[in-house]
View 1 (cartoon, helix red, strand yellow):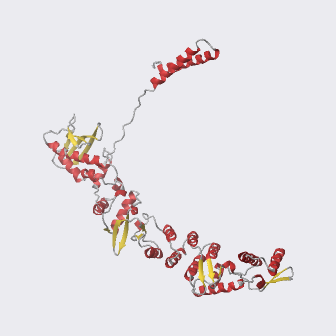
View 2 (cartoon, one colour):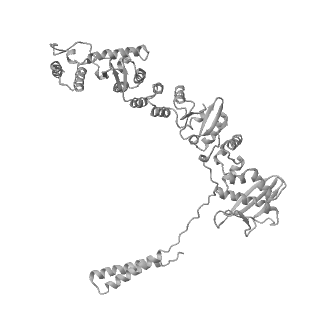
View 3 (cartoon, helix red, strand yellow):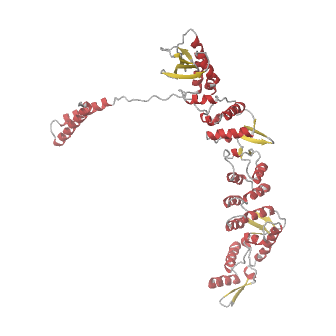
Amino acid sequence: MKKKKLDIFNLFYSGAAVVILIGVIAKLLEWPAQDILITGGLAIEALVFGVSAIKFVEVEAKQEVATEATLAKVADGLGNLVGSAGGATNGADTYINIQTATPGLPETNNLNAVSTGQSGIHTSTTATVNVDTAKPKHLSIDVNTSGTTTNAAHSLWQLEQMDILSLAKDLFFQPEWDLLSSEEYAQISKLFKRVFDKKLPNKEALPFLLQFPVKLPVPEMSKLTLASAQELSSDEIELLSKAFDIINYRSFFDHFVLEQNGEAISIRPKLNNEVQIFGGEEEDILKHAKQFYAKDFIVSPVLECLADMIKLKGQLLVEQFTLKVSVKSENEFISLNQILLTQSDDLKKKLFNKVKKLKYNLTTEAGYSYLKTLAQSALSFRDANIGQELFKSIIEIQVDDNNTITLDDVVNCYADTIYFGPKNEYSVVLSELFVNGELNNLNYVNSIIEKLVNDNVATKSKLLEVFNMKEQDSKKDVFNKLNYHLNKANTSPSGAQLAFILLYKQYS
């Protein structure tokens, strides 16, 4: 049967509110007691709020996480259990203050042998540990041993054999490496000790460490250091790769590099300017990296297990080449263009954009290597129109000491006369339209195309296409080029030129 209980706070809250409301009504109606009612109600509310401000709440205790220094003290304290187990304390429990690492005696005796069977002795050790607080904690260690010794020293000896006590000082272990086989774990333990001077616990100790009452911090792989270069075998590298994959560690090459020196493979700390690249790239890419960026890009051994660990590879590596290329270095520029022939149009555009203008001297042939390279690149575009426009925008041809032309200056029209009207009754002579030698520019371009054909750059039809000379200029093309030349020379049209413009507008 439920009992009813008066809620005192609710009574005061509600009662004071009633008094205040009556006071408000009294104020509106101008009753004599209006001020007393309002003042009394507000005073009661203030008192209630003041009392209710005092409130106690339950707070969960924060989980203690052991630090390296803390666990080192735990290890030292556990070592003292050896003396107390068989000495004058007569099996008394050991109290360890981690702040001071000094053992003492608690109020209860918790160190005792629990059971003895034919197959061996089961020893249970309970230690009370103060972890940076005044609150005691109980650390339980259960060890099954086969033998006849019954004291705690034997149990601690087994913990030392499993490297658990020394782990408290070394503190380098990865719980997920329990997925490795016993043989693999033993190999990687030796490898870490030899290369990084880090001691791993025995594999048999990992389950114990995972259930350790004090939470052990998992060391950061980025804290690995390497005093000097060390040699590794391909099997050791594959084992490292497998171990890193288990813990999803992908930043190894942010701190170290691997180099293939003949048959030997070495690992060393990475310098600030160095980047590891994959040794399984295409031959022309590796050749380019070694020839022009040997100090920046370090080629890894050709091991497939490294491919996922190396970030700069494939198209990203080629993009990096494009960003770093020096256009003034002819050999580097040509080498990169050969790589880009099989790459995307976007990468080729980035290289074209780094070239402001390319001048080819017809007399001295200076710039011919660049011209040939860019012609090959323009022909390799999947979208031929993009390649053609990019090529056209940067090419300049120096025909003599005083004149330089572009492809826009070339009139590709073989007819001497242009006709207009339904019966071609009107005509304009082409030489009267272009009076500054523009008609000779076609011969210069044709000579360049012939030279490129002889050098097996491409077929003549392909080159005519990239130079925009595949088809003869239409009347519209002639009209546009005439306007281009008039604007370029900043002159007014002559009689023949004006006649052509009027006829074109009339009959086109």
